[in-house]
Length: 392
Image (cartoon, rainbow, N blue to C red; front, side, top):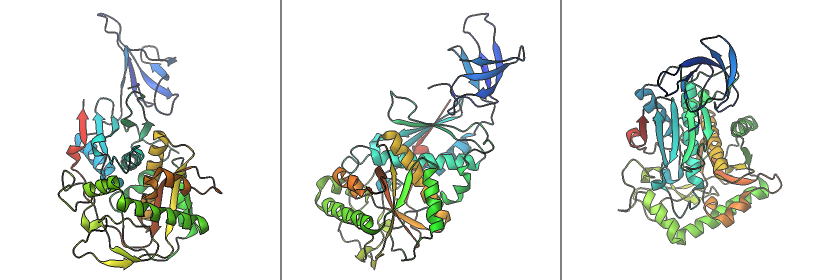
């Protein structure tokens, strides 16, 4: 991993050669946003400031207040409250005490091989967890300096997050979103026909734009196109063996369930079966009867928001995942409920037509169903100890 530092940290140059002189200084300037060299260093032996490109004989001593193991665990618990496709929770976290550094790692044992063959949804879920980690760190007053895909040789290392330094004046501070981290839940119930005010829509667009992602509400013929594509995908999913296998594994309706009760979508979170309306809500029962499950009429005019970026690679997916969670947290604070419309996104030939060619929104990564309705139930999460490693 590359060296990273904050202003106020100490640079120590100490050659392994016996008898070599040790030199140290305070870092008073950082030239790159991610904290990598070079640095402006005020040397303790002379008081002079010089530009330094540290060599292999140098290391950083972080002067910020280190996180305790309990604080690290709490931050990861907050991060893991993020949504993921079929609640697969495809993430792991590593924390390096000496560097004050988190790694967000893709857990490839928790993939959906048919519905997410290219791992785009995995990146979206891990991006959402990364956003929650940033929000939680900022809530404690720490600056979450984030670097996406920091190791080209390890594509499972999705992000590195340093939380040792304090938030600076004028920096992006997502900490105000923290009250929504554990109150945001997916709601598969009907929403009211009440239109979302333009001021709230503007706040949601601003939340996405803060992460470099565009958000647009589908309307008119474009909305009908999105609804038609979702219906087409639903029809395919009912007869596609691979999609059925993914759903069976994570819907907790048979013996082929996830490895514990702390993952997947339990029947109590399915929501009612749709009797009427146009809201494109996935039926997690796959058409199977669920004792005690009700039917209901859903919205006739669903309000769907599309998140898109110009590019379509892992870095774009991670940004879209962060934007998705930032939008959802903002929506929660605005009194909105939400669910996901991923059906058409799971079929490459249906995903591209989701975009609005008039607006030129690029590659669509998520379709959100938003509105005023009951909050969704809390779905299970794995114990933090099963997804966190704390290292020296």
